[in-house]
Length: 213
Image (cartoon, rainbow, N blue to C red; front, side, top):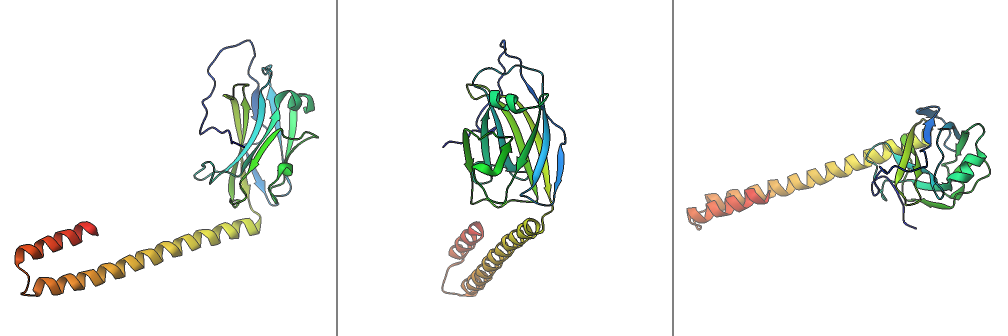
């Protein structure tokens, strides 16, 4: 299944007889202590969505979002079904991010008609839940965002450990490169002080060495 997301499609600028429904989260930021019990409210203000439009819940990390490698997943629902599930145009959206599947996102009794998850991605302490209204031709009509501040200990320490491992790999690579450069400088020094190579050739060797580093 091909993911649809804001990085590939444009916001719809057309004017039509269908009035855009405004997606308004009741909270822009949510503090989370358990990733299997996340719940927040959304108000769908005004508007009559066109037939065939979708309500999409798309989850990315706040830092460096990118599809597909840094994309947790998306879950798409028929907008007509979502409005029918709402009470006075207000929804409660429940998330369970402990195991990625079709059941991660719950809107009442509705099941998503399309969904995709990236099981290779590890949840980070800051995640954005992006709420989209897509037209029937899959242009973005409206969007809202709820930022999750995740304080669950295994998520936080798992993220910090991964960051530390990346730093260690970078330091090891830098150390290895420094050792190679040091060895190269010693070899170059022996060439430059030797008498068996003419001075012009020495300068060429020096120039190539510097450009390579």
